[in-house]
Length: 272
Image (cartoon, rainbow, N blue to C red):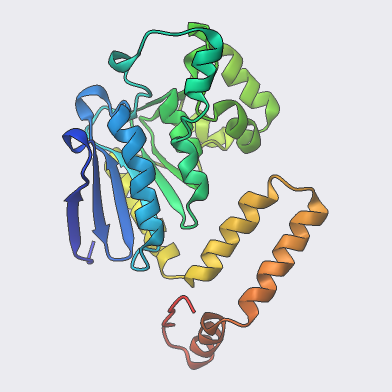
C-alpha cells in the first residue's frame, strides 16, 4: 500500500482490538489470536465504541474488519467467559441488551470483512453484519448452536435468510453444518473469494480504497437505501430511493463528479 499506516491500540483490555489507518481506510483487527479471536467483554464493549468513533471521523471513508493470527477470523464467543445461567426470565433480560454486533447496523460507512480460517458461531454472525465479505479459500463458516441446544443469538437466524434465502439458510441453521469458502461463495454468504489470508486482506483493502474514492454522501445513501429497503415493501423502498436521489442532485460532489468527467481529470470530493 502506498498510503502511510498509523497503528493504535484502543483502550480495551489486553489490546483486544487494534485499529490502523491507511489513508481513508481504517483496519479494525480482532486481536486475540491465541483463542482464534474469540470475543470477550473487551471486544463486546470495545467494538461498538470503535465503530462509532470511526463513523464520526470525517477522515475515514471505509472500514475493514479482520482477525489477527493464522488460525482464523473469529471462533465466536470465548467459552472461558461463560457464566452460570440464571432463571429463564432473568437470562432473557440479561441477553436482550447485548446488541454489540448490531452496532454494525448503525454504521453509515461501508464495512468490509476480510475472513480467513475459522469463522464460526458469533464469528459468522459478525461477518454477516458487514456489508461485503471477502474470504480466503481456507475459511470455514458455520452456525453450530443447534447442536448445543441453542440457536444463534447474534443475528444469525435473521441475517442469513435475508442474505442467501430461507431454504439454504435453514439448511445451515438446522444442521449446524460447516461450509467451506467455495460453497459459502456459491450460496452468496461470501461476496468475493481469494486464495490466501493475505489475499483476503489485500482485496478487502483494495475494495475499501475504491469505495473511499467515491463521493462519501452518495456511498452513505446507497447503503441506507439498500439496507433500509430490505425492511420495506417495494413501493416504500422506491420512495426512499427517489428521496435520497433527489437530495444528492443538489450536492457539490455531484457537480464535481460531472465537471471532472467532462474535463477528464480526477474528481476532488469533499462530502458536501
